[in-house]
Every structure is written in structure tokens, then in C-alpha cells.
Image (cartoon, rainbow, N blue to C red):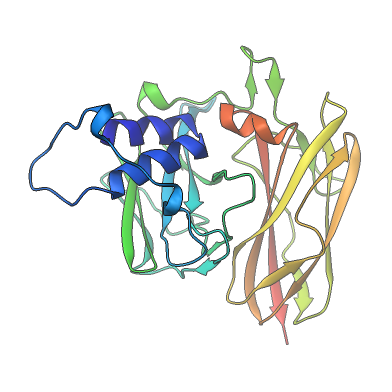
Length: 291
């Protein structure tokens, strides 16, 4: 079953992941490894529930950069269909690494986890970590996450089996959308993403407009907005929708409490293409909310 779970996580298929997890969770813990044949394995879709289930940290893969460094990206799978969770940085949400000298304090870890989207997919490559050329196949960055009393962890690594096409896939003939956030800045494609060059300001419960210009060869594109981190809750006037390529999309966000927030936007030509692990673009908006 562990093999099935690994394959499900690697494939990115939420359906397969749910089934594999269900089979894994249906057996008690054992002190020694056991191999249970497929005919004897059981599973239940009830691992997806409205509340009370964990958020699973996922290693989505890695990709090389032109300067010899590599980028590791992580996503997550909230197994609750209705419960959003806020897990602040600290003993329940943190990173560790065995690579000496690698500073992880500036990594943009998510602290807000929306419920499982209706299409039953996980959030792909929500954040990424750049590692130097010396970070090799023996090294790991591990994300530790505790949700609803269950602690899980996943190692990120630069082994060949997990390499990702970025920002284009020649085999599929696809490319990540080009996202531009300001008129005087260049556009960016891919999962490493683009950050708004300014820290935006807002007031509690007052609307803040967020926008991005998105280009792609396809006629229509999918766009999704989410709270990435912050002390309160963020409400959007719209969260997931399609737009015409070559247009500027805009949403209105409202913040329930003062503090520092990050809003994450993801865009891809077709939401089903997430399952192929290529090709989407991330954009991040850093916002300071005052009373």
C-alpha cells in the first residue's frame, strides 16, 4: 500500500491519492513492514470528510535552473471538504534540512489551507525553495505539518524520478501562462512565480483590488485565488473562474484582521492539466492590513 500511496502522490491524481490513503489508513500500524496483496487491500472514500481530517504536505517535484541551482516545490492536500485550517509557523508547520548552511527562514510557507476544492484535486506547487548546485540526491528538505492532531511530513529531493518540466513541456506542447503584475515589469512564467514588487496596504473589512495580466496561446485560461498566509481570514468576490487570454483579471479581497498577509494566484490553460504537472504560473501578493 505504501507503494500505491507513493505512486498516487507522484501522479498527482487526487482520486488515486484518496484511494491509496484510504487503503493505508484502514490498517493498524505495524512494527515491521508487510506486503499486502491487492485483492486483500481495502479502501474507503470516507477518508474525505467535512471536518477532522489532516492536511497532507506533498512534495510535487523539482526542476533545474540555468545557473546550476534547483528549485523544489511543495503542495498540499486538505482532506476536509468543508474545514479550512490555519496552522501558524512554528512547531506544527516548519521545515528542516540536512544541507548545511541552507537558510529556510525566508521560505514562503503557507499557513492557511482551504477546504478540498470540488474537483477533488490537491493544491499543486503552492510554494518553492531554491537550493544551490551542491544540494544533491542525498540531501533533503522536509516539510512537517500537524493538522487536526495528526502530524505528517514529506521530504523534498532532487532525484531524477521527480524532475518536472518547467516552464514548458515539449512533449505535451504546453507552456505556463505569462503573468504580468505591473505595467513597468516583465512577465514571468512558471511555478517559481512572480511577486508583486510593492507591499500593498489595506484596511480591515475594506475591499482591496488585486489584478494580473495573463497571456497564453490558448484562448481561455483558468485562474484561482487563495489566501496563502495571514492572521485572519480573506474573502474574495470570486475564487476560481476562466478568462480570455491576453486580458487583465481582477478580484476584490477583504481581510478580517490586521496583520501581514500573502495572497496566492495560480493560473493554467486548463485545470485538468494540473494532473500532468505542467504548466502553471504562481503569483504572490504581499499585503499589510491595518485597522
